[in-house]
Length: 164
Image (cartoon, rainbow, N blue to C red; front, side, top):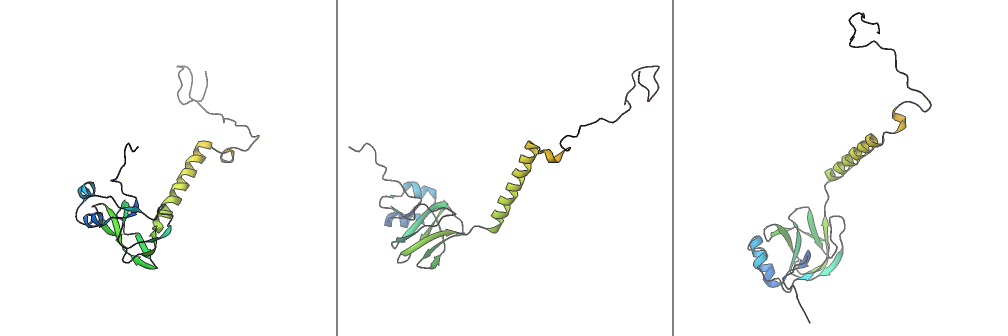
């Protein structure tokens, strides 16, 4: 017994069916809602910006459900393929005759600089909250207030510098 079967799903990285491949270049997000996606198959499962699995893929159009970014490249049998816009906001790659494919993301060097800056700022916050002992007086030293004169004298008879 089947209660519900979602036949209109599309994988994050997958080969589009012939109908979906044709519609992917013709319209924006409205085309994605109206397109028949049955027959699309998942490939390159587990692809992230830091992990690039490789897999044999067939000829056709590879749909990638990430926002369009030219830093993504698909290499098929060692040859690079550039991304194209698909369904308005995501991207796809023409796989030619297919082969061993690997989807990779070229992380910009500035990202590492920003991450390092963020780690340093968090370390600064942690030091501020924890207030390590080496920052203040030495262990065993007592704090002594120096003699001081009052800033405001409230007595009428008192002279500045005298206490009443």
